[in-house]
Length: 69
Image 1 (tube, one colour):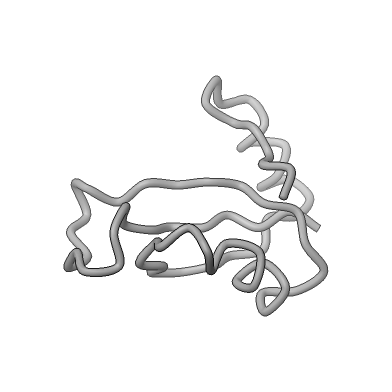
Image 2 (cartoon, rainbow, N blue to C red; image 1 turned 60 degrees about the horizontal axis):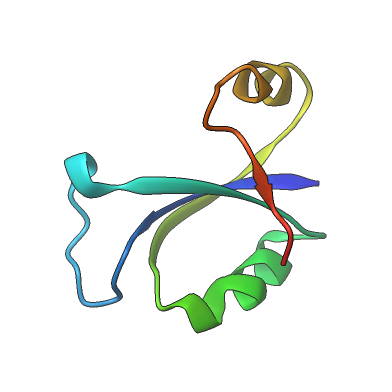
């Protein structure tokens, strides 16, 4: 499964919409994905599973790439 992760660059940053970044990560569950990125020091706002039509839509975006972790 592919998950879309909304995050801030540093754990100490307060979530602000204009500074929120997105990455895509493959994993078995939300918990698995969070374990994979814990060492990066991100302030994770939200983890969302991306499936079916939503995944197809996201893949059309030029910034779409799944991180291999």
